[in-house]
Image (cartoon, rainbow, N blue to C red; front, side, top):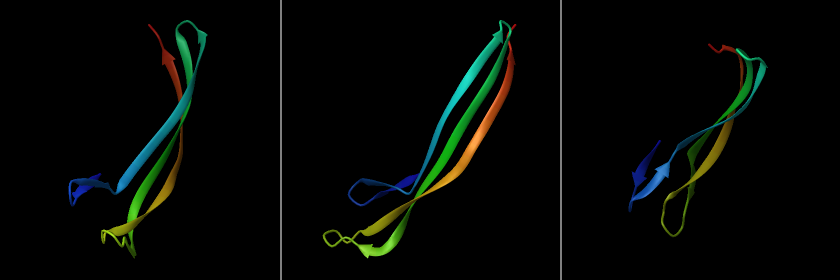
Length: 79
């Protein structure tokens, strides 16, 4: 999410990141066991009371928040 700010500059206020990995075990020809984990993070820019001298724009401070892991377990049958 973001907005256009003066002179065509794009200013983003929020960013989300998702990184995951997984394993698939095939013990039999018609069944697989799945295990996976995904991490989510969220970054937000907030304005401060500081300003750039040359342009007068507000200085933004970026803060990150970890939303924790999500574990996935699965059993898949193949026909």
